[in-house]
Image (cartoon, rainbow, N blue to C red; front, side, top):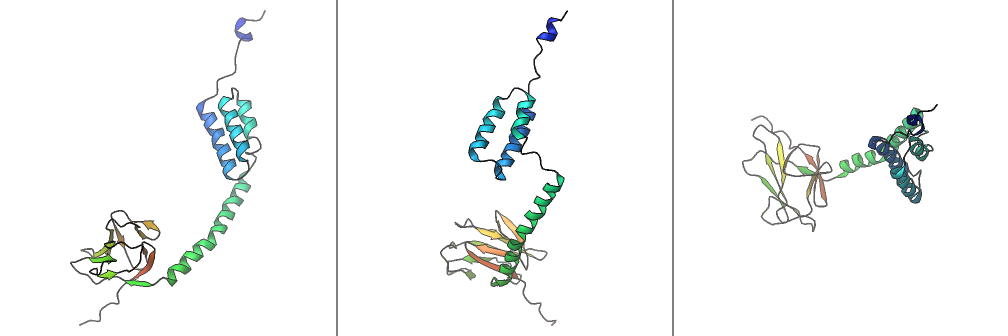
Length: 189
């Protein structure tokens, strides 16, 4: 005799974590170009209405076959493909005009298009009062953007607030870029 419990058992309900894992695999597959947009959209819909783990597994069976070796190869290829970009940035940095850091002074060096600035940059992407550069009390320099329209960047990152800078840093005021260089040491008196 069969109990009523055995004849009416249902499959375990899928968890949100299982669905999220499958949705992540599908997103990665689409990002890597393994799925067309239409296939991706259809599989996403099927993942959201799936009721059994086998249904979810079928949606990603052709995407999860990569082993550790292929993942390693993808990482190596990614690193090698980024190499020319790194070389180009270093080469470009060496070709940038040098901007001599100011000698220590209690007053900041104002940078911008305004004729009264200590460093006047006459370019349409530079604001009238673009940035200021001043020395730190213990040595070193600080750069602060003064609310410029096109921003100030240090080593490719936009400046918000005040950031320390040093010789060798690449700075951009709008679309004008420079490589900071330290002043020559003064001879002993």
